[in-house]
Image (tube, rainbow, N blue to C red; front, side):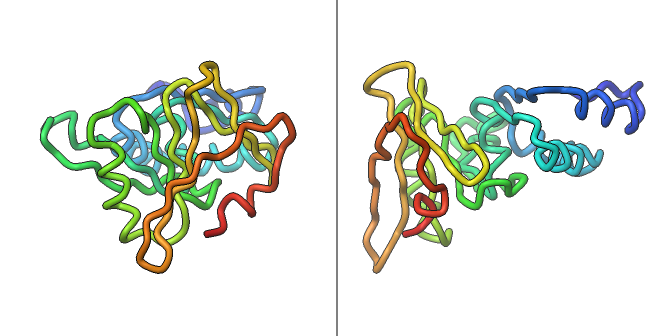
Length: 177
C-alpha cells in the first residue's frame, strides 16, 4: 500500500531495497488504476529488472501478467461478469486465479479466451506458478490443486493440466498454443 505521505523517491528506495515484494488479493481493477495513476507500475517494472522477487495471490498474481481474469466488478455488483484486466505484462499470458474455487470462473474464462489471443494460465487455490527468468514450474500445497493451460485453437477450446515437475521448464513453450 502506498503511504500518501511518502514521496516517490521514498517509495522507490523502499522497493529497491527489498528482496521480495508480495501483493495480496483484492480489487485488481482498482489496484492497477492506482498503480498507473501514481507511477507505482513503473517502479515495480524497474524492481523486476533489478531481480527483486515479485509474488502474490489473487489480484497479487494477476498483476504480473499481461492480462487477468478478474472479479473486480463483483465488489459493487455480485451478478457482474468477470472482466479482462490489463496487468504489468511481465508474463505474456492471461492469468486466472481461483480456477477451482469461484463459481462460474471456468465459464467466464472460456468466454473471455474466445476473444483473447494467446494462452491463459488458470490456477486452482493452493497452487502456484513459479517463474524464474525464462523458466517456470508449477508447485502446490495440495495434491489435487493444479494449474491449466487454456486457449482456443481452430475453433476448439483446450484446457490442459500443466504437469508439476521438480525441474524448471521453458516459459516460452508453455505460452505456445
